[in-house]
Length: 395
Image 1: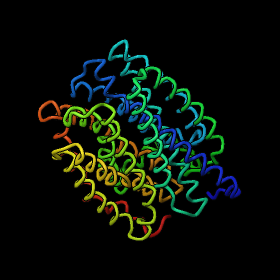
Image 2: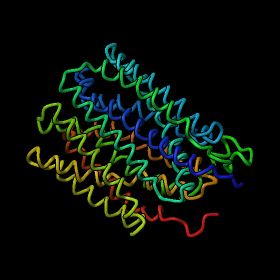
Image 3: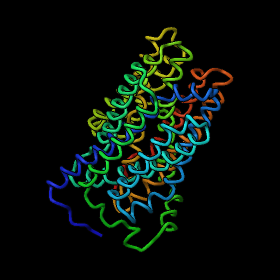
Image 4: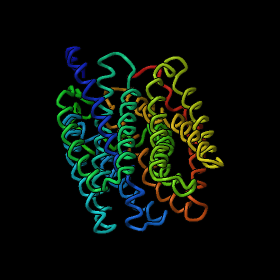
């Protein structure tokens, strides 16, 4: 079913709104991640217990991602992002105060945060695909660069809060209010998603689940999982590794985390030109090699400066995998929402399994040595990268 495109001015406004959704999502997640070491210390968590606490975010995300294709098809990306921004703000407020009461309140808050983030993620990617088609330009990875810009801003602000000894509760509480209000205001300019195949056929959740049987969609999901593991491990563990293995001050650890995020931002901003010139498969395989090189420097570097160089290359290596996976899932606009839901669900399994895997390995070989597991996943991404090649004809 063909949907009449809104006027170009509406697409320009929707472009700004989509950037805002990605940016504030990044600010939210980096704000939380920047204070993980302080919350860990307050609760006296070992690496394995910290991994299990972080698992609650992925668990909440996975629950929402399974159904998010149906949710976005039914309610639209604008209402989904607005609702999830409100829920995420409440969850971040809960985490900001709940950790004073113990692990259980923190886990509940983080599960809610993950649920909100998962549905928000699918909805803003669907809107990004709509805007990309409306503009007639490949800008999906630049929306993801917006997410990375948000994470850099959130990480740098977090580093400043740590250096100034601002309490975790005050920092995260203020950010929760700002993020929720700003996102709900921004998404008013989203354009309608259009009629999906699911809506046209009257299908519900059962109809959406049929996309879990498509081989190409599943392979794209595996590819996205590998890069999500690479990205998520950096977000969760660079800060902790710098403090524990390199004995860096907390503010320096947060700066290494910010450098990793800045490198991802640069890769995502300049990625479209490389993808248009060399194609998806060649580019993602090349950046996977760069990522492995960065990981080896970070894991085996003898001094902090080498670890910073490793974080830089690691960030470049992690930059394009997730947005390329989202674009590949959206190649057919009629079924973009359910396919993005499937791919994102598989990808978020990396966040489900990653924290406990690195945590448990960290108990035995140190966290920084456990990061070698990321290189194994990047090799898997290279093996299945052919699945993200655009089909010759989208029906």
